[in-house]
Amino acid sequence: MAKPTVVLLPVWGAGHFMPMIEAGKRLLRGSGGALSVTVLLMPAPTPDAAVDIAAQVKREEASGADDISFRHLPAVDMPTVHTGIEEWVSLILRSHGPHVRAAIAGLDCPVAALVTDIFCTPALDVAAELGVPSYVYFTSGAVMLELLLYSPVLDEEVPGEFSEMDGALNIPGLPPVPPSVLPATMLHKKKMSTYRWFLETGRCYMKATGFIVNTAAELEQSVIDAIADGRCTRGVPAPTVYAIGPVIALTPPPEQPHECVRWLDAQPPASVLLVCFGSKGLLPPPKVREIAAALERSEHRFLWVLRGPPKDSRPGQRVPTDAMLDELLPEGFLDKTKGRGLVWPTRAPQKDILAHAAVGGFVTHCGWNSILESLWFGVPMLPWPLDNEQHANAFLLVSVLGVAVPLRLDRERDNFVEAAELERAVSTLLGGGDGEAGRKAREKAVAVKAACRKAVEKGGSSDAAFQRLAEEIRRGAVNVPKKRN
Ligand SMILES: COc1cc(-c2[o+]c3cc(O)cc([O-])c3cc2O[C@@H]2O[C@H](CO)[C@H](O)[C@H](O)[C@H]2O)cc(OC)c1O
Ligand SMILES: O=c1ccn([C@@H]2O[C@H](COP(=O)(O)OP(=O)(O)O)[C@@H](O)[C@H]2O)c(=O)[nH]1
Image (cartoon, rainbow, N blue to C red; front, side, top):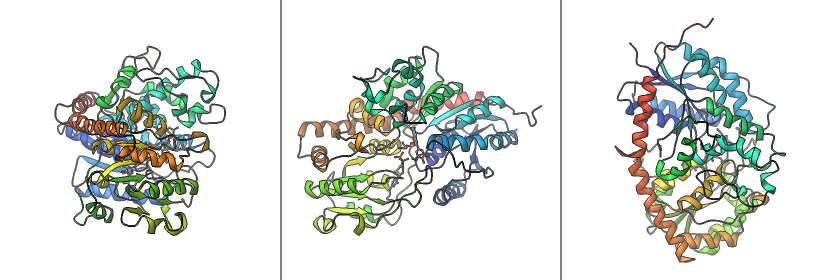
């Protein structure tokens, strides 16, 4: 009989698609050959994302792994009316519901589980209808998962706006949380029409069989415990959390090192500050000017990945262009920083850069994958969150893990950071400024690197969680009826 299959339903995007495929591959290995993986591919919303995903699928198919197969779902109409990225993705998923149902029902093997992304709650209903166990693969950390699960409680506890309340929030498993680190979706209840999405998603998650989280127990133990004990869900037991990370797709370095890596080869150890704001990282001109001023004055070495404005700014369509450096940077900046700085105007190989011994610090937008990559390579951070769950991630880095030097930003001014503040924080992080704070963050980053690596080793916490998950999934396999009455 054919092996039971785990059906993955990933969304597009650098921080979402590959991490889920990588987790699927590790699940295959963890099952000792007892399972296969079927990936359902929703057509990507932009030509760039389509090219990206096609390349990744091609690479996986070429690798010859026969236990992983890809199936294309038909196209659906893209929503034109929506309240933001959250509803946009949810609406697309809803339109795909019948296709997902038909694809699963059409499989000629038992189905062990349906694994969906953070946004794919409509797929949980499809799984329930088919009697298939369902898991949310959380491509972000457990803190964000907790915020979603706990949001209905917070909503009752704080009837007014979070942004106007005094004091800190009491969130299980975390030190007192300043409301300013909540995602924008929560922060301005009345203004943000997606606030209801947040509460409903939290409630809907309770329908899942389990949460597979790309984190390690060593990074977020107290939060994972709070979820497991039902402290976030009014005492109702939440679906089991499997902390299986860090799941990072690492590939062997190319034969011809990238130009950024060759530049790093010529720099002293731990001397370079990496500045990169993620796959969508777009900075408006005032922020570019502040960064340039800080980098020029700090006299530290830097590698700055600077992208240009997207051609299309609609949710889900925002793809940065290559930067026109002469237009974006202040006059004379490149000349004045020549030799100690490199500004890279297009996508850079971030993992290879973070892996390089010359990198000593990372100004990051706090996307979860960037954080995991930085921790994996023991690089301390300067958190400059811009959007979504990134402020909460920054809080974790500074107030729980201690691997980052805080950067004072003005959330009311679109997360603006003054040049002098950035200059101060860079000196602290790389050495030369407030010695104690920088030294602590650097030491913690080294310790957390070791903990991350241990977690995924045989017998480590994430490896053990993977084994438990693979076993639970294998046991849950069902034969999906071909036709429903
Ligand atoms: C899938 O494509 C996109 C996802 C996001 C996005 O939006 C978002 C909205 C919220 O209200 C809360 C969130 O947590 C959230 C997260 C999110 O995706 C990103 O997740 C990544 C890791 O999986 C990473 O941490 C990023 O920093 C998050 O932004 C937004 C988006 O465009 C703006 C997408 O295209
Ligand atoms: O120039 C870049 C920018 C980003 N990335 C990668 O894109 C992913 C970004 O994911 P993250 O969750 O950090 O943020 P997002 O881009 O989803 O906001 C990470 O794996 C980065 O290594 C990269 O390789 N080069």
